[in-house]
Image (cartoon, rainbow, N blue to C red; front, side, top):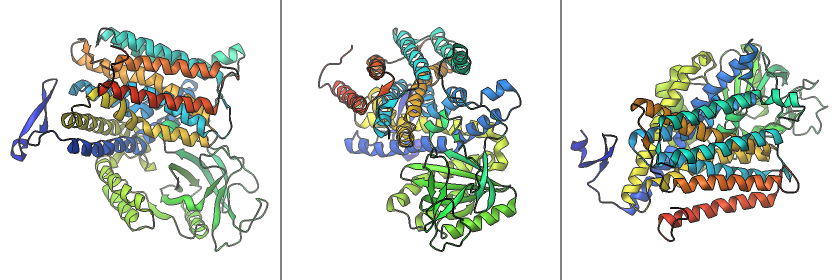
Length: 567
């Protein structure tokens, strides 16, 4: 049927024919148009992680926390979960891009991972420092030292593996084995630190229920904050950062505009609307007050659950409220509608395609910005695919949380599909603009596209006075990028090809590996300078400048403006 549509030519990979339209001669304009399409693939990867991949991981982590077995509870702790199952949520696009590239013969796969490593260390750390409200930024010593050691080890092992321009079964298994050692090190870090009497990472003991009780508009509720970010989710025990809400006489309340202090009652009817929900702790991702003007959606679930969707600039936070019964839930809904003056869109969650249609209709007919209306269109196209296939296992519907393994598997499938499309689009860009080789596209454009959501998350975390966590996330993600996103696909592919060596095009990659080590040495140098274990604003500016220099040098080598730094 492809021949009927037009003349096509095969782009050969591993003996499988992938079609590309040959009727049109290579065109720079067409190549530039493909950049728009590859941007859509970046958004699709991020959306499937945000909407299905990470929520399934969240359910797993929560089940581990509530387990009665101590060894299983440890897997629900923040550090351990972040280094294992949650690493898939953070590094999922890179992992599947590398896996698919092995089967398509694309040179972009390994470049995406290497480029992401450099982007994470320079841009994420640099932006986190610049966005930090308090400087110099204090670094947590034990986690930083541990992750720096394993990141340096991962770089050395990667360089060793690529020396002969091929990955053997032994090399792939060695990298994957190092991942297991890293996980076990994270697992026992707290125990070792306690035995040595050192100050280590703070951990929170697992408990049957980590939600805190309080009152909202006089209704008893349990509150859980869910941050929509691959990075925040992956390294904060599966995206569910629970607030420590001390139950007080006022509990969780809505503060009217004409009330200046929490000591006054909020029972009076305020026809002008309330400022928002105020909490005793300022640790929430949106601050101490979640304002009603940022509340865009109220999603009504079963079993007395309401999900409040807050959007502020690039931040998206869900406040999951659980009431004692449906009657209390309905009363709470009435109170929210009264205090918010009916601005939010109140609806039941629909996991089917009809839910995607309803969301698009609301976005186009609401009073939102033009950008929000335009962004709703590509989101709708992706939602039609996802909701049309994963509606039966969507764990965002609380009645289906027990189906999280199937949701996880379905999200993996779609990540693989979108990664395949991204690589094929990179092929089309290379076809139309031959000056842009696939390896260059992978190490720059694709790396930035897959890692950009992590950079945004790091800035938001830093603004909420959590820059040290953002830096720890970047280092931990980089370790697992090599040990998982590279090694696991190599092991899988090698096992399916009779354990033959996997030939790798290392043009530009070897230089990238040296950039990885050089940037790590730079960060460590800044940390050990006088003012030990701190980073200053000037350090952040230098890191970002170095990344710009890296892009300029890499681009100049690609376009042959100057010879490569390494042969």
